[in-house]
Image 1 (tube, rainbow, N blue to C red):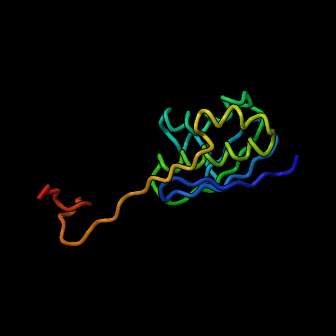
Image 2 (spheres, rainbow, N blue to C red):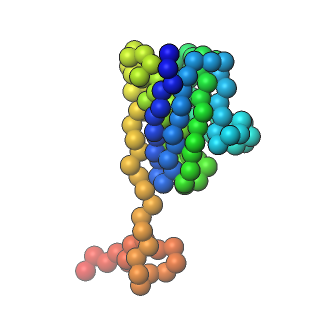
Length: 128
């Protein structure tokens, strides 16, 4: 199996992953992923596609991720890994699709409008 390259995005985070057969090592920005994602929730999000497919220790993943916050980065990595697993084996798509792991979440932060207070995004609602 050759190296599979996929891209995942969430909010403003962009994750580029390189998946190959191995022993289950995940490297994020040249660091171990447990050092990069310190909370168990984020670690679970990154490993979720492997757990659903049943391939926790089958592939090595090298990740380059930038932009956004730590949660957006974890979810971008999850999307990229899910896409790569679908390319490895076509049956994986039937497992990952119902869980929503192959759907790009389109939600973005709404821009600030001028004339509004610092955190406001919308003008005051008035029925009349």
